[in-house]
Length: 383
Image 1: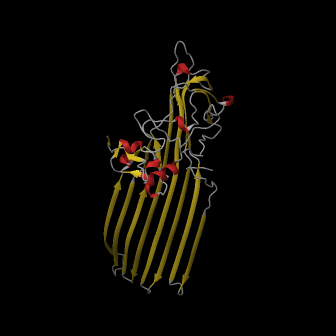
Image 2: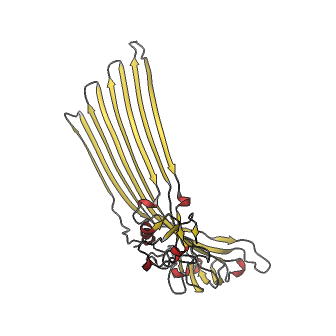
Image 3: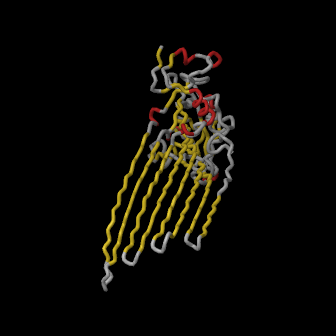
């Protein structure tokens, strides 16, 4: 199935765990290794209604639903962990050890939302279990994908020295955690968002019902008139706007160093008494950046430009609220979705960060060997 992005993926994913422990050299050396791999597919769905609870003299219905909106956000996660512990008894008084862990986490989710809204006066039927031939005054559609990668490691060497009177321990730790949402690390920029386009609501009418007054989540919305919401070419930018493409740029890295030394001396007294002291030093470095706001481009390639659309890049993914709910157009299709993988790869190959002229915006693909298909929204378009 094409979940969560626009590629065909298996929804049954492998998981594995391996652990090994043993001792050597007459039990002076102990080792422990552990490897774990977890892959999970999650359906993330959400129903977001709006209610009108204010009856009028001409409309005494106590409660009318005025918006039916669903989120279909399938998510794939991958976690892998490798850890090891090595202990060695150097002498009867001295032992040393090394602990290490490596962690990786990857997540890809598609936050697709689609909804229709209207007013109390427009809603035909009882407004709670059904809409009958209802004109739509607002339509919500969004296509936002998120790709997160987390990598981390911890290394902890330690020693312990013990005599009848002394107990001295020391350790040094270094750890790092990196969280990266930047879609740019993915070859096809799967963690991108596409927008700037919408479908005009003029003439759109729907019939909607919850069969047998059942689950409030299970609205079945069928378009009866107007431009089909299953046709990607009907989603267009305004006359002065462009289809837009962007990706998340959030990045965070935390690096920690720590050293610790403790000593305890037991006094030769009849009453157990000891003196203990130690020193600890730590340093933490935070690196954070978030260029998301300016990582946005106008699409000016074929089919794009002013008033353009993503019609040339349809996805095979199906918008599915699940649990018996659905949106169906007058042509029998589900709400259209553009192909994030294809457009992401196109962006990677053809984006422009330089000034672009109007002539470049209208140049055909055939007449340009390296066309500026994406123009930074912060870049002026000059004559």
